[in-house]
Image (cartoon, rainbow, N blue to C red; front, top):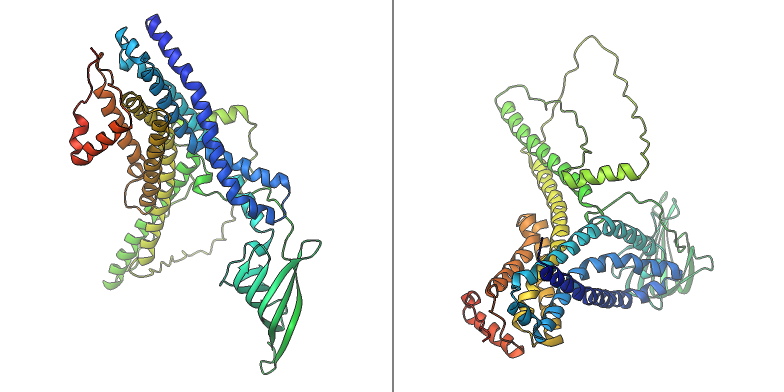
Length: 505
């Protein structure tokens, strides 16, 4: 059992981190939420949505924001607490009493590990569900009012399969159009093309009909049964009514499609396994195509593919997924499964049916299938590694924050904010670049997502190694020391390994 003084110090350090962690998490989450509100609120209000739907959009955005800000809050809390403790000479007093830096860091790292586990569960269980609900809600909102989703210089489908609209300029606030072309395919016998110099859109009271007021244009009409009939009518003002534009907000109840960011780790592992099977099958088909081409050149009979019964793999991979499956089976009622109807075998004919196998050529299609399957697998594997990496960032940031705070104890609030912004920027830029490289199969998914963690963890371990000995307390440090250290690193990167501490007399 640990000595009483060590357990007391550990509880003291953990209690000191609770308030800064909560404050930093609330402040960072609020700032990012305000940014989202400022970016999306005007567009949502312009669609005439109920207040509850607008609030739901921002509530569903909170889990993603918390997933990003939680590692940030850990770094801010560690920097604040250890800067204050070092500035008040509490670290020096504890070292003089025989408490080493390792004893001071151990409870902080243990607490950061607990936060990392909570972060992983948050990112793996809650975040995919809210991402799925948010995407479904955003698709429903985008379908509500076409005037705010029309694109300039593009033929937009206003009524599916019937009415298409193109405009060179679209003002979403005033619904004004410039250089308008309307393609009317609603009549099976006639085709109409309406062009106008300008126009304006408005909606009927019920919200399902779109009214167009067009100015200075013409209507060209062709009879499909008799192409020799062509009518052209010029107008100064033309008022049109387009029915069935769907301006009523209808919320989707069940959406079964899920992207990689809407899946849990277990779901993505199953999807990645299916992609690997597709890649293996594509490689086998490519080999078989080449073999049949050689048989055909040699005048031999083509070789058919071996009969392989496909059985979908629904077993959860890994200990974590199996534990979740058992927990869900214990907490939730069992699901009812419909019986799969058996196919009726064809009647016997008394003679074998020849199997025809046509080879498509040199296997170009199989190569494309193989590349697509590997890309899908990489996408899922990158997202899985990202969940682990972002959760582990809570521990890595705590490892980085301790030596920085002890080295520059007089940096104050400026050090906390400046160092936090620098670390966040480098880390998340590394994640974005790594995700892009991993999806393109340039690097492995592990290196794509874990490289920022490895870099910062190495820097943190080096910093802790330099202050590991009792009595090697930091000699202070403010922003001038930060500038000197950065200049020294630029001149010679190996200077990071040389201790620059001064023993306290």
